[in-house]
Amino acid sequence: MTSDAEPDQFPGAPHPRVRDALFGLEEAEREFLDAYRSGRMHHAWLIGGPQGIGKATFAYRAARFLLTHTDPQAQAVRDARTLATDAASGAAHGVAAKIAALSHPNLVVLRRAPATDKKAASTVIPVDAVRRALALFASTAGNDGYRICIVDSVEDLNIASANALLKVIEEPPPRALFLLVAHAPGRTLATIRSRCRRLLLRPLPEADVARAVRALPSPFGDVDEAALSRAAALSRGSVRAALGLVDAHTIALVERVRAMLDRLPESDPAAVLELAEAMTGRDAEADFAVLMSTVHDWIAELIHKRAMLGPAHLARFVEVWDNIARSARETQVLNLDRRPLVLTLFGDLGHAIPAGRSGTPAA
Image (cartoon, rainbow, N blue to C red; front, side, top):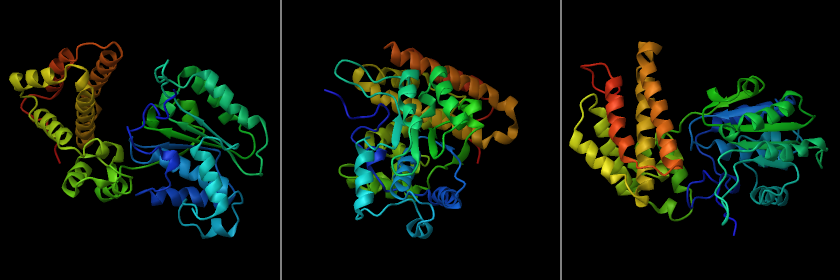
């Protein structure tokens, strides 16, 4: 039996392609709409920003709008303030249904393959998948509209598949549109990046994170108000992060880890050992993911707050985080004991902080 879940989909949550609701990205929608109405639509858009803020939802919403309104000068397009489509319209409903089923003839999606009973989810988008998908652009769109390719996400392309995509982006056929989702746009292949119009999305305000969670179906939208408020505050503007923080256990773990990080370079060996022991076993996989995400967010916040101190001051933090992230991937892929990684994590970060300075990012 084939799983319908995407490899990076939040468990149980609706996939972005089946949702039309979008929060906090009105400015980006206006920019995209203005480009469409101008008649000079750029053929490739790099939609960048942190994970979980709505980039994929934006891409599918944009595709739904363009495949419903194929004439940029139509009255409905000129009157539009957002990329939302009229759910009561037969045309819009038909397009939405086909996109949800990944069966629209003018849309192709490049993504990692979901898991099946016989195979695990793929770790990359292979070059063969790119070549098969891009066959769409060898034909003419059925209604003189756009042929659209969504890449979710470019981080999942390997060198061969990225170069195969680049060939079409370099010399696009008429009425071709590429929507490339990027969690770290600066790391996208430079030759692809240089041929894209960048649309950088910012983390959402807490109020929009809470609204987005509330708009989800049960059980996500039924969360207690106090828990949702706390999750939104800790989410760093990511709806995905908020969904993982709505239970009391996860919030307590995040606050525990952040308190230990904020004390660096001072460290309590007993507390670190206790945390390491808690990360053992299969039932601790979710907690380990929360731990690593919290460390990543803490380092990103510290680097942002101390950016004015110059790259020499921050280079050590970047190096340490790269080493930690690499070790975490190896630990996960090879099913290694997580305790050594947790035990060295706090020591390595502590050594990266100059003596006499708290690890707490300065305001």
